[in-house]
Amino acid sequence: MATILTDTKLQAIAEKVNHGERLTIEDGLYLFESPDLLGIAQLANQVNYKKNRDNVYFIENMYINPTNVCEANCGFCGFKRKPGQEGAYTMDSDALLEYVEKRWNDNIREFHIVGGHNHEVPFDYYLETIRTLKKHYPQVTVKAYTGAEIEFFSRISGLSMKEVLEELIKAGLDTMPGGGAEILTERYRLKMSPDKASTDQWLEAHEIAHNLGLKTHATMLYGSIETKEERLIHMDRLRQLQDRTNGYMVFIPLAMQPRSINAGLKRRTTAYDDMRTLAISRLMLDNFDHIKAYWINIGVQLTQMALTFGSSDIHGTLIEERISHAVGALTSQGITREELVYLIKSAGKIPVERDTFYNTIKTY
Image (cartoon, rainbow, N blue to C red; front, top):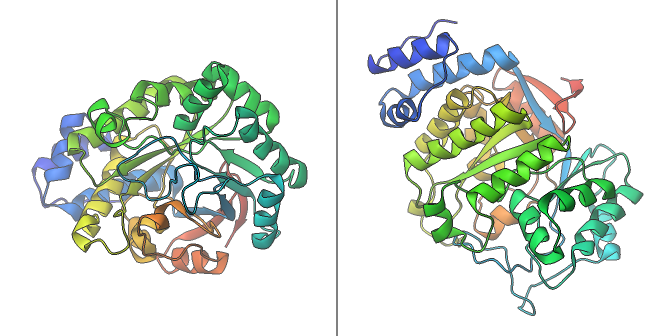
């Protein structure tokens, strides 16, 4: 696949990519500045094609937020409520099962569970959430609790993070989502998520999970106060951990949503930034198999474009996403399998329905 570059400075980077050499943070900074966005896209597309050919993956999944009560005060969140505040909720087992039953279809293969850091309930509440779902839907993979939540559980339970994860695995945990990472630098975290896990704690939670046999996910929440260098430091820290454990399945760049649905469009990331960030992610994260374009954040049309900017996954049906929509996501809260297949096919790619671990269920 020939790559024609209009930016001569990109040629040295392209040589490194073609020879399988790891890009540096300095290379990444140039990629963020280069005027040749389509040249960068071609390079990312070339890397993705070597890894995944024309396959694009999706999953039938259901998003569940068992509680929105949270002790943390993150600068980007519109989902959390304080105890007793209007709109605050914590599902018990009956409410959880009722929520799932109303949205259930027999094709769902994954429960994606993220919630608030609710200090009003004990650690056993979070274990019971998994036990309840596993008891009633044993065939469904449970993807639950971010690295930040693991650190929070450790604090409220008095257990180490390893002990927390061992208890969650006993309850039926199959994998962890990638949330809570935001930007993995302390400058960012002290300003935007000062009450949550530090950079090192988040990474440690995932390293422990990998060493216990769990494959996990990684995200990056971009588009607020972080610098381009901090985005690249974030990617570098992830790939260093991946070098040690090979425990990450996919990287998901998440575009920041404004705090209010009425916020001005200037608060949103641009299409150029979204596409460039996805492509650079593919080029920097050489030891990740997949880069996911998250349609909830960037919309279905940009998600289609992302399939020629290095992305090999477009997430799933979700059924009812709440967290991004609580801060003004303009997309629908769910999408059908038929829509996902059409989206992929009309981009000239091959739709592959997968399970959580990228095993093929059906090729369309």
